[in-house]
Length: 442
Image 1 (tube, rainbow, N blue to C red):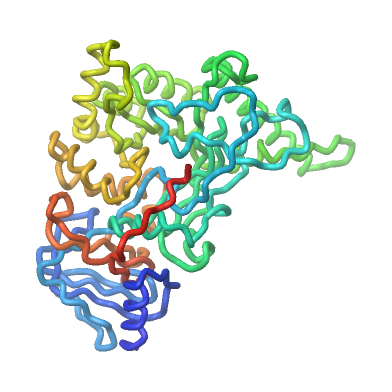
Image 2 (image 1 turned 90 degrees about the horizontal axis):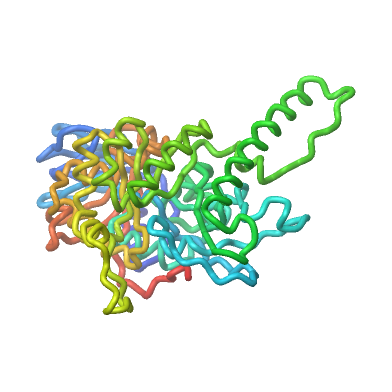
């Protein structure tokens, strides 16, 4: 058994993704950070068949286990990117006469391109709607973005497939495996909404008001569609058959709604809009979280915080001066997570427009340096995204029975000098491989 696990480790170190294997692996005498409770300065953790079997200061190590000496190592739950595109192929451009939309303050640039799908009708049917498309069905295990994510200490991505108004259903999956079906943890975690405003001439919905009206109409149609289906299923005799509508099916199947909100006005508007739609709500963006924490706390709405902190445009006109509010937001955005934590708002970090996964921990450190505790920073990378997306019974903390996803660091996770030793994904150990230039999904 030990020879089998050693072979698996060597192949993983060579950069080859491995399927989960049956076996027992233990880390002995490491500093364990469960995220769901206090840290254990000198503990053991035992993994069996891809799951955490036991954890504690005096946990016995089975004689058949492949043992890793944990002296000097910090063991964390596997890091989670709460809004990602890792492992998804570049989306083909959608034919349109209108100018390509620019990224909104909340939306990563890589999420700003729609995906092409076949449609039996014209754009008047359900324009800018891919609600039925699932990220899990687009996942490509061969893409280098997955290896780059592992090299940065990440084990799980929560990804969404496109950037139409209804961009599609997000999926949670591990960032290692030879086949996508082995990697997927949950195929449908929510429906992501974007606001790709194109200005005049782009067709409906071509303005913010138009998009909000369109979303409102889709949810009204979905409610009628659902009641029609229920009535027909109860007794179809004498009733016209409800037409099949995959766009509405996708909306109905989504357990939560993600809405973009970077600025304070957007946070207020999207909270109210989500309440009107009567949908479980998650906001993403959060550049002005330091201004909107009280609103989020009162509404009990979680926030996904973009780790691409606001900064001046490289090619900005030097004769155009930014407003005081813009300058203040650039300066105070990294303080937002600390303000959210103090207000009791659940929040998680996502990669946003940060192109290199290796830069993500540096971005998190900016929030730590701005007042966020290391305990809350760890939770925002592990436990909180799992809780926000309803995955905390499987992911996010080091507890018996959960998926064996671990990030093992030499040094402190939020120290610039910290070095990733290896990750464990589905019980398989992956040592960081030489990083190749990852696909940018652009």
